[in-house]
Image 1 (cartoon, rainbow, N blue to C red):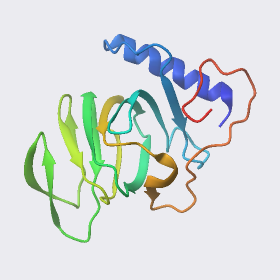
Image 2 (cartoon, rainbow, N blue to C red):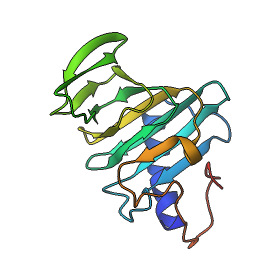
Image 3 (tube, one colour):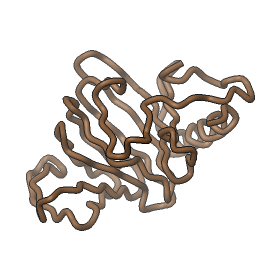
Length: 182
């Protein structure tokens, strides 16, 4: 990705967070990626790491309509995806027709042939080793994540082998803030 593109999407996400009352901590760590696929509008996400402790992490994410976080799972990380604003679609592919997951703290069986739609305030608990992908069903979605330790370098496994963990950045202008991987 070009640094100018990263800066522009960060500015847009920051304005959206502010509009919805999300005050970011001082000097937050931002993470902006197109997953190395070269099309941020199709496969991308903006994440702000609110806290990253060895035992737990919290993020707020901005996902635009038609922008998918590709199928992946975490080897050890357990996390809640919380729709903070908008509508969030979560795909939970499986060979089984129905799977048991925790939605809003309650275990329930859901079909795997269609995405689970989370409305504002709703949450899904994703256990380790469960493939998932997500996208905004509204113009955009603000998504919270609370998780056990976040280790992108060795915990994430993508279904698409072309996806890299960290993007190469074309430094066509100065960075407006430090990224999580800078």
